Length: 168
Image 1 (cartoon, helix red, strand yellow):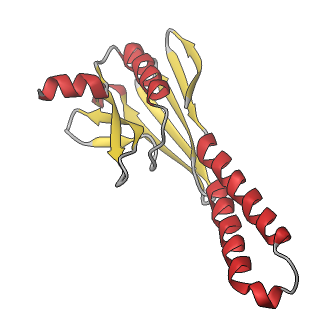
Image 2 (cartoon, one colour):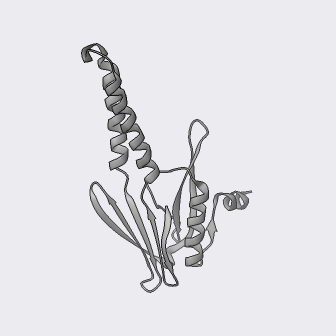
Image 3 (spheres, one colour):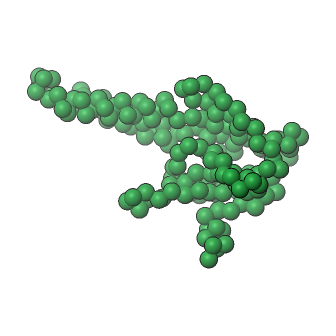
């Protein structure tokens, strides 16, 4: 996720899911490599061949399925236009700038202790609107984008550290 354009009345942020797609490419390559390396008669190694093919298929899905998203904050229109593109086509959602109370970094902890993050809008009516359907690493980059968007909107930016202080 990164800011691709900024001027006094407009801020554009893109999320292309490159980390997920990159990991998917790695899985495709690993699965294909395993299929090629399986020795001899394929009938004697059905299970490893199927597992390698499933690994490659999972990687392919990780390349194709994630949406890319574009967030255009426009002061003149008083809107944030969110455009998402994926395998099912394109969708657009408009959020009025006055409805955005804050931009937060949402976190999810895995069962093995790892923490992943995504950005969300906290709206005036109390709802949260996630920027992506998935969580990824890279807290610092997300905090930087959240701070830039919050500064553009002249809204508070409640990062993970700030929320911990407010709860305590």
